[in-house]
Length: 231
Image 1 (cartoon, rainbow, N blue to C red):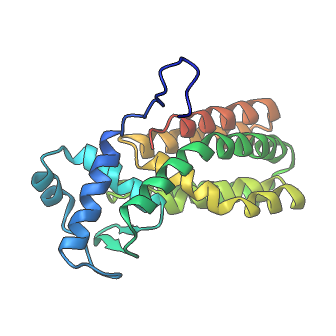
Image 2: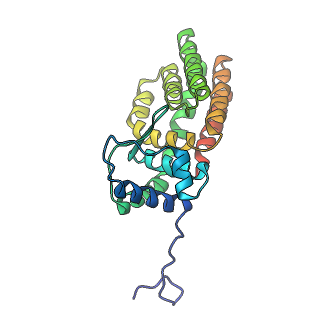
Image 3: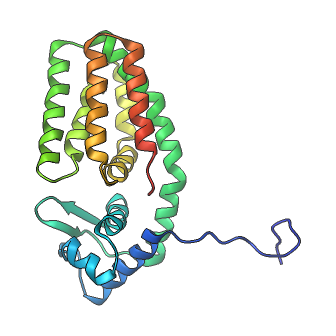
């Protein structure tokens, strides 16, 4: 029998996180209810009551399913089932997501910090207007009760454009789907949309003053915030 080096012949098994158990229960509910692609899940409040957990805890499980593309959470409508996977496949994908998160954050830090510095040096009035519009979009989304994902994506795209570096912008496009994972996971944390919006404002202020180091530092602080994600 393979051993783990301590002579006891056992391999340590990681303890499943609460939201992983909730993900399993949610998938079980989806299967027992006969839900298929395009069907709407019950409201979060109803699901939380049925499962005996807080809405904040349930929301983390829903965010995990959204990150993996199992559901699509639409503001004003709710969670819509995209496809019905097996429990084993979802748990495996969740663990793979956690494993690659540090590398995605590392890539974002490498690329976006430099893009912010370049944006401080090279931005035009039109670039600043695009960033301000993205901030307004995100603020409106949050005020309307959603997480601000569209405004967040719009903002980072505007910063990349303001750097006027076609190769770095192409590299960001190349990892855009991976960045989407970090975006959904981060903005799904309680209070995070508002924090993210404020860090976006700090980035714009630094870019507007033409200070590359301040812009780089502000972007790094924002990415550090993204990294502090539990999914």
